[in-house]
Amino acid sequence: MSPIIEAQDLGREFTVSSGRPLRRVRRTVTAVRDVTFSVASGEIVGYLGPNGAGKSTTMKMLTGILRPSRGRLRVTGLEPSRQRTRLAGRIGVVFGQRTTLWWDLPLRDSLALTRHLYRVPAADHARRLAELTELLELGPFLATPVRQLSLGQRMRGDLTAALLHAPRLLVLDEPTIGLDVVSKSTIREFLLRLNSEQGTTILLTTHDLGDVERLCRRVMVIDHGRLAFDGDLSALRATAPSPRTLIVDLTAPAPPIEVAGATATRVEGPRQWLELSANPAEVIAAVSATHRIADLMLREPEIEDVVARLYRRERTASLGKDG
Amino acid sequence: MAEIHTAPSRSLRGFSALLVYPRLVWVWTRAMAQYPASLLTLSLAQALISLSELAALFFVFSHAGRLAGFGLHETLLIYGLSGVAFSLADLFMGAVERLGEHIRLGSFDTMLVRPVSPLAQLAADGFSPRRLGKLVPNLAALVWALGEADIDWTAERVLLVPVLLCSGFVICASVWTIGACIQFVVADARELANSVTYGGQAMTQYPLAIYGADIVRTATYIVPLAFVSWQPALYLLDRPDPLGLPEGLRHASPCVAVALALVAALLWRSGLRHYRSTGS
Image (cartoon, rainbow over all chains, first blue to last red; front, side, top):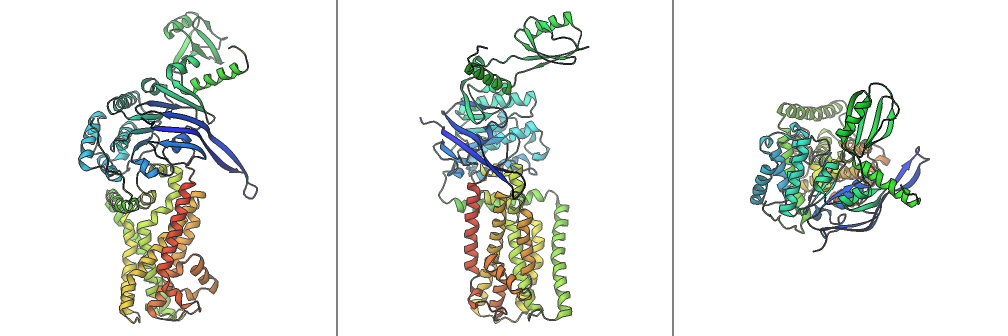
């Protein structure tokens, strides 16, 4: 079976003008360069990278919004920028930060309108809507105008709108941004089920490591426009292990804390950042035995940390030093 | 979950845009109807603006009697032709001027990922029946002028009135779309475009002969607003062109409309091709 996404030497440049009028300086900025990958039908792929790395540009090229400057791109066998309208009928797209629903209409009406935009037969629409309503628990707010929905409800509404035409590929840009833990988990479980029961291919960008761990068997990392990593999550972790960080607020400034299972990486007045290599409970016990603690915070590693480590490793490796 | 199959995509995609547009318009009308008081007030406000323009026209004629050789009813004919074409364009295509805003907010991206012409979505976006408030007084003025003005009603003239109105509508809508296309390049060009759309409408309400010859030539050959009301009125009234431009121009409105629509379509496609989206 041919891959659902095929990108070869994909690149996109932007011309940026700066300076005052009449004395403008134009320069070319490369947002994405020589990106090559393919996604097979039924995969869930996380597309990660820090802000400004080229994630959104890639997503916009995949959905036909932006025309690539170079390279070859096929999505469900179509060329996105030339066959954008046809492609739109085959894929579902959700931008986490903006809605495709109509602000003043009840959710039900927005979804009904979506049926006409995608020309889904009425019977199919009704059946599909019933299924999605049950899975995403839309029932209680189907009659509520979209502007009154909570972010989590709106996101479930947007997912429904993107799936009513049964797309083969679902493209999600930050689907869990700003959501609480429960909403995140509802959406993750739903996506897993959609993938396993319908075989819907999912490509998502996210800053949330939880999304990646729960959903993605494969991750691609983009940085400075280049594909820096393409493989499974455990391989990424092995290449760039990312410990959790314990943030300790002491009652008074102190020299860097030295305990087993943790390394102080940063000290700012009474606040210290400890990189954990052991069980946090043991580290906390060890610290509280020698210091007076005012407050504690445990920070999960973010995608940025993983990616930053990936880079630090690459750089040290290329310098010939063994880190 | 069961598999479903969407209707196969057809080659008549342009046609489907025509089918989707009324539906989008209906949805927006219903959304606007959620605030009936606001809708009513805004409609009345629009009607009042049009009525005050009409009142100004009557006021001018109560003093001047004739304007560049045109009497009240002839001027009212020009006013009506221009007003109807413009308010129809405003009603159906006026929303395209907000392209720059949609680009900035990212909502244009969401239009692009739907399988429907983004131009149809843009034009229907925020459709509000309050714009009918502008159309109704203009239509009334036109109907009245058509009855009162000194027109030799041949069969040809009767048949051509709707054609001329359609041409005027298409010309206005095209100018509007071209103005929107500028916003692909300069996101804040709305005001610039407005000087041609709204400014142009104010100009075409009066006999162009009252303006200087250079302005009339510009409005004929460059931004062809003369074909919205001036040339059609010369044709209906069967009067020679006071500025001596070729007589054949008065039959050119439909051709100008088609040509301008083509230019607008080409610019729109080129704008989409070079679309850069926003940062994130």
